[in-house]
Image 1 (cartoon, helix red, strand yellow):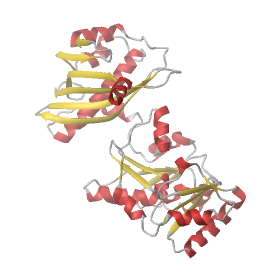
Image 2: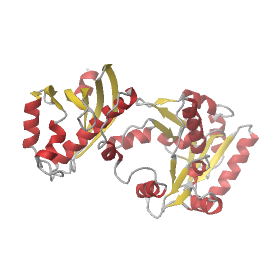
Image 3: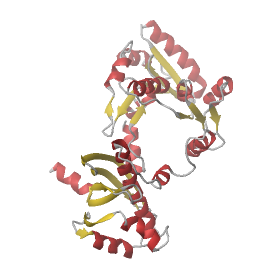
Image 4: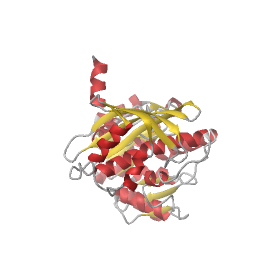
Length: 370
């Protein structure tokens, strides 16, 4: 979890609905990323961390990894590449003789992880798939991605498709050569994240454009509650995308382009900016119109996270989210935002804005500590 939080501080990483961490020994759920306690209890069977540490201390060729890479159900070491498989076999036998049921996973040529026998990335994924199925959310189009030996379990989960990046470690490439009999695993020609995009195309998992751009083109014309909540989400993402493109001058400075904003703002709308300034819809529209292309050379990047929506009344919705922005060479800046949206059939996503309030995140965090 520590590694994910460090990454999220520095990069535009959205908060996922589910996180599988620490080689499948930890599962986090929801926007608050609470620990899945049922999974944690499953891993207690046959596990004793103290015994593992005791045995490891007897083996000088094992070097404990840093604290952030350790876990309550994971003990991790660094080993010399020439001794990796030997240390894996010796430690496995010693722990078996101590009565433990564990898995010792060797990956990347230098990493050795001791996990509960029920743990692993594939086992955690199988657990989550079963959990989703029990709640009526049948999984489909599951894509797993990997680059090292501790990802092998992912590719063995029934019904999934997989992609192995072109820069994968030798142990994963070798496993793929010996085991890819069903054709559901792609050995990508691209590296890293580009390989995932390649796999989405290869398996035809969705449109070949950014998903948020695609869904924002689709109007909503039905009264289904869950669909309306989806429309609220799409409208928040869609309007934020338009705003950044407008400020960067990436859309034409024309009435037809600007209508994306003006057609979704109710005439009686109130806008409260982070500076504490309150604007009417007309004043806000005039302000944004004047700012066309004003950040063209800034390298502005905007993303939205943790979008949640709640129905207040028929056709009326409260939505909250966390906007983030970054200018080239500058640290990212966070905000809290809330809005009230109302159904409007002729609007791009079937929604119009009645109220919008944006507050600088750092200011609120400071106040909460006082």
